[in-house]
Image 1 (cartoon, rainbow, N blue to C red):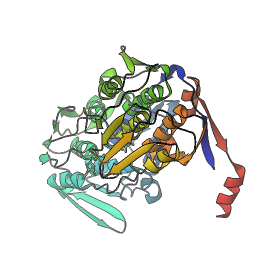
Image 2 (cartoon, helix red, strand yellow):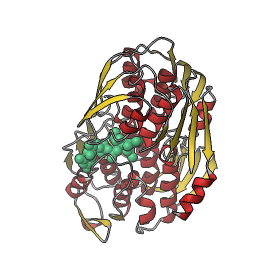
Image 3 (tube, rainbow, N blue to C red):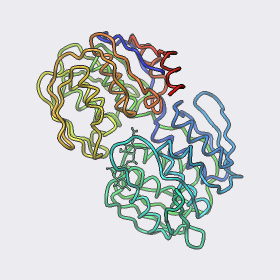
Image 4 (cartoon, protein in one colour):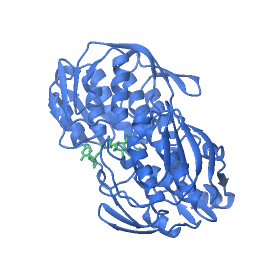
Length: 430
Ligand code: EPU
């Protein structure tokens, strides 16, 4: 078994470089399926979700070449419209983008239902509503989603999303880039990665307007050709290290970011008494005094991101007074609370609301990462806690954080990866 072992209670000082955005990369890589030519994609994060989605493209016949650590060339010119392999697709949420991309390219797709973190139900009815409105027939049989466009090509139309959904917005955009006519997505998501996907597609010759607002217009074109694109920095990775500096104290320069994307996080840290200084492409986070309580509600962008909810909860556990955290996106994103309680946190959860009594100090414990962001929150809590914290199930964390141990060690954290051979042996026997 591989664990992170953290000796906490040490303030952090130094600089952390932010990688490319996971949730942009896992949509932009499938978008290469729409392109007739070579896409050079830069600032790709080295995380397991990206490796998986690249493997899926290769299984479908894409030519994927590594140019350097963060750059790949993807050529889908000779791709066939095969079935997406189940064992790979079920391990990642973003495999749903293959439905939109394959529908756009071939007018048909066969993709297994997606996997990903467990936050209760994660329906994709809004994606399907969009595909059906654009003339596709969609049904599920044999463990696969089968989608096929009438006459082999998607047809532009107006799609109103009943719920603001990042995945549905981006998936419909993928299926519309090569459609016949104009697609209008109303009540679209406005997240930075929605804009990044539109920018990527436009760089390859698409005609997309309005990304970043709640109405996106996609005029279908006949062909996309290759080009260069650099993925935006990861808003959530940056926010996670900002929260780590707030929790552990010290002074950390979080570099290679777009400060505008971090404003929702910066605003909350300022309310808690953390100093945050915006620079051109960096934010300096300093915390020397005590943390104040605050309330946080997660909402679609530009609201406070749900993917920062467990990390901000870790900081609120250390604040003076009572804070109220409201989850406004997912039904069940508090599964990590029991792990925090092992570290001395006082949290009561009722449905979508968590009431956090600040305890001033957490203590190290053995905990596990229940999912990606919950795992990141355990790391933050461990950095701030007195004593030793051991975090298991770290594969969840490595799905979305490139080199987290190296990056945190670089600012003075005492964090190590530990492989326990006895438990490995036991796991093999089990
Ligand atoms: N929803 C529906 N029907 C749909 C789609 C969504 O009811 O067809 C609901 C969901 O159940 C949820 C809300 O709408 O309550 C928002 O879901 P959304 O579709 O926006 O989420 P997603 O596209 O599945 C992406 C990220 C998540 C992030 C959410 C919200 C990827 C691969 N995943 O998921 O990221 O929490 O948007 O911002 O982009 C993470 O990175 O840790 C992560 C979980």
